[in-house]
Image (cartoon, rainbow, N blue to C red):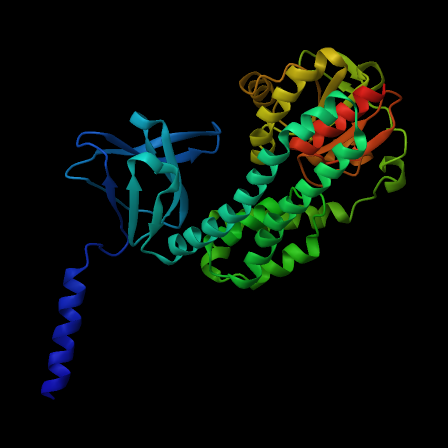
Length: 387
């Protein structure tokens, strides 16, 4: 009997030592090398405004900082250090989260203390190893890539692009495999959300992964988004489709016409350049909005040489569409029927997720689909040099 009493006392002592009350979170941080009085901001994303907004602000004291609060479910936040123009993401959930920050390497800070943050740290460590290989390859071959562009050596360009793609596929493979083996991890949900925008998106595979998720992930906002997107795609699959062959690589892109933001009818035919990118997007599409800065940079660099872009928005709200165009500085041609995925252009091009892009040559023939970043730029440069 005495042993039972002693055991109960030990458990009670352990519980009383916990800094975290039920339904609350504490972020306990050490800030090595950061002076007292420096600001730390806890931020989250405002989905409507597509920007990070502050939730709480504290000051470093004796090399430490702490945030306390309540949250209903795991959510991606970030810690910002405005005095150093740096920060990093973490998952806020009701428990004690630990953070280790070093002044000279804030972006390499360590997070842990909870299951989701421990997993997030492990995932980041593996991703950084692959990213380092990619960066080393790009640094080593930058001169060769630039020279090949200058002399229009497409053989070398394609070889380097292929090697770079193989390294990128290593990161992609890691991400694709992770949710299969981590059904309780919050970042598994985030990864599955990203799968909807992949060129090789497979609804059956995504649905199978989602069904294997623990209820703790299915019931989050992220889980509910995945469920809604699966339903939307399955509903779309039941609708009549356009002929896939009509919008495949090698075919002439079907012409279309729709209203611009100011109400004018604009067609694809009158928007063609030496190279034309058809960009399906929407103001409410977070991956699209994240991709826009890279597309803006590409357009600004190569429009004068013959690159044209026509954006086809799957928006429903005219004002939100206009606001997104202004906010993201999209200066190229934009059209929309304001019918979301029921837009006849989206149906005509078999668009089931966004962003979706088609690359056309000077004759309007489809030469590539869903290229992004370095691959898109390389393809555009190749086409411009050949025209």
